[in-house]
Each structure stands twice: as C-alpha cells, then as structure tokens.
Image (cartoon, rainbow, N blue to C red; front, side, top):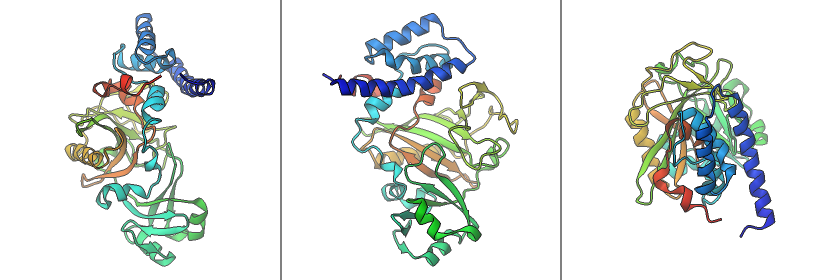
Length: 339
C-alpha cells in the first residue's frame, strides 16, 4: 500500500509527463476517435493500473492510425521500468562508455574527471599532452559534459581557443573527434552530424534485439542535434530503409527537410547490418539493464560510431508510436508494477 507521500509524488510525476502529452496532442493535425480514446482509457486502467497513462496512448493512437494493445506509455516506462532498474544512470558518466564497451566503438579521445585529464587509453595527461592528443587529427574537437541531455552541454573547441583552465570550470565530460558523416545524409542536413537512434532490449534468455530505430536530423542553424529542434524519421529496423514521413518536435508530419528540401523517402542506411550487429553486441556486454538507447553516427567510409549510450529514461515513445508496440513480449505491463 502506497503512503500519501508516495501517491503525491507519483501524481506529480504523471502530471509533468501528461502536460507535455496533451500539448502535443492539441497540436497534432489529426483527431482521436471516440473508439480509440475509449480503448486507450480502458487499457490504461485495466492493464496499466491508472488512467494517468492514457494521454501518451492517445498520441500513439493518432500517430499509428489506431489503438494497439501492448504499448508502453512514456510515463509508465519512467515510473516502473526505469526507476526500478538498479544500474540506471551510469551512461551519464561519459568516461564509462569506453570502459564498458571498448575504445574501438566510441570516438572518445580523452576525459576530464574532477580536474584530471585522462586519455581514452587510460593514461593521465598533462596539459601539453592533452593538446597534442586532441588536435593531432583535426583542428576541432567536441566536448560533451556529464549528465547532459537533449543536446545541451555540448561544446566545440578549436586548437587556437582551447583553454585547460576553462575546462576545469566546465566540469567532467568527454572529448570526441569530429566525424565526417556519410554523403547520403548531406542533402538533408550538412551542418550538423546526422545520427541514428537505436533502442535495444535484452530478454531473459540474453538475446538482444533492436526494438526502435529512427534518424535524427538537425536544422540549418544547429551545430549538433538538439531535442528542441531535431527532425525524426523512422527507419525499418529489419532493412534500414527510411520512412517517407518525418516528424517535427511537435509531432506534426513532413515529407521533406524544412530547410534543405531533401526527401526522406528512399534513404537506405549505409552498412545497416553492421550498425545492428554493433548495438546488439554491445548490449550483450552489459545485460544488467533490459533497455538501452544508442546514438550512432556513420562516417564517410560507412563505419558506425557510438556517440553515446543511454541507460536512464531513454527515448521509447517515438518508437512506440511509429513502430510499436515494441516491448510486448517483455511483459513490462505486469512484470514491473507491484502497486
């Protein structure tokens, strides 16, 4: 039996998610049918335990063209799956990725941890050695702060304007080399690096698989992907072929990039099988968390690079709406809810 404090905390949590959901639903140029609304309400109450989980089901239904049993609302995922995961939050510490998964898969060059600079190989660096390492291949590097989300906490440094003392003030994070993206993405977005978001899950038998997949394009004024402005385009998780529909941050649909005019239809992810093999292989190395998110970039030669991984409240709602239900076989609706 939940205490009053627990009930109030849960209500506040759901309210924060559902304000966003209702705002999105009001802005989508489509109607939710009475039948689908009733099905969402019934599923939220009877299966998930509360009508507070219905608003995200409304969005899924409008996006998918009808209700589908087995969906996991975003607030349910955060409340039961994420918060009850023992090892959540490790990915926010940028220096741990290469330690868990190996240097070959990340574009990491070095880390700043509590004022100490450490190479991806594990060697502690003084200022001159850090400069040499960072700018040996290029005049520009990227720095990503720990605990940064939604494209925030990302900075670009050039050799001429690099200052060690400033970095110590900024705090912990990772330096990564700049990746030149595959040419196939340039007609849509050439200013910021196009990334692929994979959501993987691992079952009780240790089998890891891709459950959600979409492209993320920046806008013309963006130097990197930002949640507030990015465009999402689902691609088939079996073939790597992109949808002809993209989605703006408000979930309205488009068929072309609004700045470049590039069409989404016909995009085939380069070296797609290698991308899938990489993220599922890495998830098997870290089976302690059932669901992980991966941001992958593909370079000019078709090689995939893991820019970052997420083992907290990673993105599932877009995949659920456009490709789901993605997790029905994992029984999250029953497995995680105890009250």
